[in-house]
Length: 296
Ligand SMILES: Nc1nc2c(c(=O)[nH]1)N[C@@H](CN(C=O)c1ccc(C(=O)N[C@@H](CCC(=O)O)C(=O)O)cc1)CN2
Image 1 (cartoon, rainbow, N blue to C red):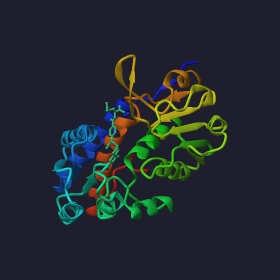
Image 2: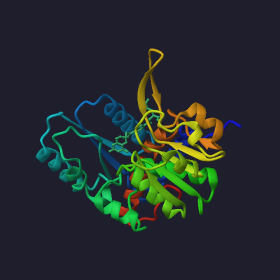
Image 3: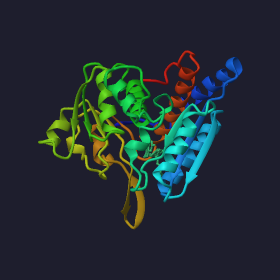
Image 4: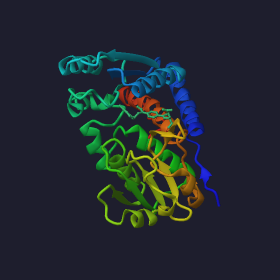
């Protein structure tokens, strides 16, 4: 039977609606407007699109958006000085530096210069440590979006076998921590994993985040499994540029119970969760109760 499609675009709209409700209440009851600062270095075309979307959606939910667009040859010292200025700006509750950065900039150094309380990407080493020890943290947006969709689809994830294919710091590792936090039995697989097809075939939940177009074919998927495809790969097919995931959607959707499409699956949830994290950061900064249903 064909898999149920998990519609990330529609789900993201419901998350944005909840965020807008919380933002309105913060304004009415506390006279506070959450502020998000996004920093873009260089002119990578995909990053420019994502940053534009982030700014637009931030304003649409009623928050303040500040964009800093810096030259591709901006020095590390100048970037760190901007982050420091934003760290000390009380009107800014969330700071995000769009990745990837140009090669001459040290990504780890820059990310770790963001105040952990304003690190709405959840990439700062303090937030990584807090998440991995099950403490309250800022949670990376893409894995948070995947978790929200999985919880919505299954209710409880307790006891399920989850395989995360990919071990990146921004998706694979935090995704595994979140699934563990929801009492899944978690395997992190990668390009060197032995018998990868068999490992994936044991999974009730497959999260594919390897960055290789259509690497996971349908015959790796257990009948009825839930497949979350994090990949966003631009390829040429039949003379056209198309966007595909890390999973071969056509064959996988014949075996999966449910599957996210690309585009329209995980991608839109990434920005929706960024907005959610900004409201969460703002509430925490002001000692207010955290918005329900928007955190892990
Ligand atoms: N600082 C960060 N940098 C990057 C992150 C991040 O979370 N923080 N993630 C990605 C890029 N990204 C957001 O920044 C992002 C990627 C994709 C989408 C999205 O909605 N994709 C659409 C397709 C859009 C298209 O046509 O290109 C979809 O999947 O439907 C949103 C955000 C790397 N950098």
